[in-house]
Length: 312
Image (cartoon, rainbow, N blue to C red):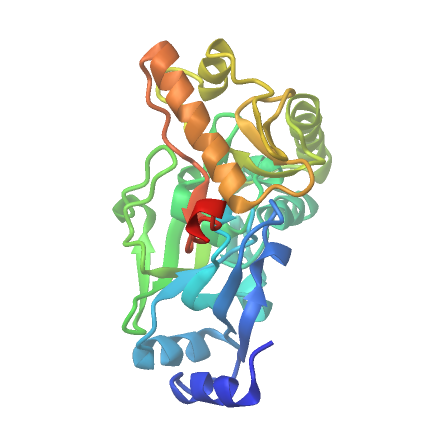
């Protein structure tokens, strides 16, 4: 707990906002892995104007956190300001075959809303953990479909606070990649769907959910796919061939059910998870010659190693 004096000093160095600042916020409660140190400053803007005004006056490093699904926050936490988009940033509007979605809205919520409204094309979002902002940032996809397939435009705020609308064809989206600068914060997106009956869409949603349940560790503390598929190969096959299925480090484990999924089985630290991932990458490289690339984002500061008896 920060002292009142320290809190006042931090506030004095930040732009005035209508939203909320939190100091030393525990990010382990906001990430699916359940690990990570604190955010030095957590900012929840009240609305788009609040976010823009903050950015135009801000001098601190900025990081945007979505649902905390596809991320490892390191044990030393995140310095500067961590922004989390909630409230009005999770709104959904429908106009005919178009659905406009706030970047803070969960992908799953979008899929379910589309089903209720008889809109088809975004069913795959039912199996994508995270928010629309994260889906835009990494061109999230599943079962042969990607975010870019139905995207019309995305709205983002630049570091200087200016709002821009980017047509999908200008976003440089490819497999698990988006060419929009990393320091632009996505706030909204428009998707074009097709009309179908809610009943037909529900059948497709159920099929996706059943496949996911059968092949992925959906009930564990995980972050989704750990590594990108090195086209045309599958990451899980390479991991399996290298003998890394079930590999452990402390309470971190590569899932027996789907070995491209990493799990926190209890008290794993962020360092345990990251070190296990690096061990898998090294083993796969030595065994197959293929260098796996992380799909899970690792952010924040590492803690210094503990003192050994020789240091005393």
